Amino acid sequence: MAQLAQEPGSYIAGPPTGLGVETLLNNEDFVYTLASSADSKQLAVSRLGTKTFFLSLFDVGSASARADVPINLTDFDVEGLAFSPDGSVVAVTSRDGALRLYNAKDGALLARWLTDEPLVSVAFHPKQPYLVTGSAKGLVSVLAWPRFTLLGEVRAHSDEVRALAFTPKGLLVSGGWDKTLRVFEPKEGT
Image 1 (cartoon, rainbow, N blue to C red):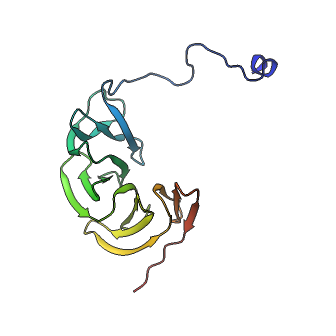
Image 2: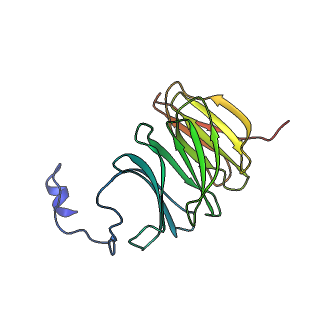
């Protein structure tokens, strides 16, 4: 810190410290996004193979995937991943307009929901059985799961919904390429 204070704008190079042991999971594909389960024991990765996007599922600390399933062709980027609160399901969104649910243990496809808009983000509510998707055209959709009943939607942004997250208390936060960050308090109704 003293060296950095004496030389503003400089940096210190050297071996990394404080990060612990490194495990190399993949050294050949482009990684588009990743997600960790709430208990930090699992990782889900969307990666671009030669002709297909894949969902790779790992146990943290393991160097090999326990499941590696093709999702769709390279024409449709896979950009959103999220684990269900209990870690049993992985939600995947893609620019082909599909939301897919996979079994987090073996990668088996559990359900699929199609929309007319390319999907780029996804998040599970921490306590309620619903999730939200964000589209490339600004639409935020709320769905009950696992049956995929549409509960509501709003055009929250004028461009891509690049980030979705629920706070521990259940507030929904969305961020978009339209330079806005919005907070919603979901309420059940008829």
